[in-house]
Amino acid sequence: MGSERTLNNRHIINTPQQINSQTTLLIGDILAKFKIIYDRNNCVAAGPCAAVDSEHFAINADDGKADLIGGKEVSPGIWELEIESDELANQAVEVCPAAVISIKKIE
Ligand code: SF4
Image (cartoon, protein in one colour):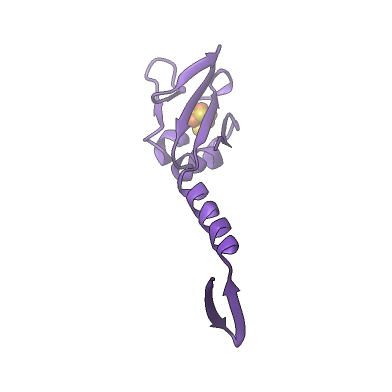
C-alpha cells in the first residue's frame, strides 16, 4: 500500500517505508534544537549582534560587551543557551567581527 502520483510524466510511488522516513525527517526538522555558544572573553564590544538579534544579545552598559540573554556560563567567559530556532542567532554569527558566537545543532 502506498500513494501514487505523476510528476513530469514519471510515475512516483511512495511506499509506507518512504512516507515514514520522510515524516521522520520533517518531524526532526520541527523539533530541532540548537545551542548558542558565546565566548565573551574575546568579544570586542562592537555591538552588531544585539542590533540583529536583540532576542539573544544585549550590550552590557558597564563594559560594552554583549551579554547572552538567559545564557549559562559553562566555564569562565564561555556562555551557552539552548534555542529552538537558529534563524535569528545565525544573523548574529554572521555580523560578529570577532567570530565569538557559534551555533551547534544538538538534536
Ligand atoms: S558582535 Fe561579536 S564582538 Fe560585537 S558585541 Fe556582539 S559578540 Fe561582541
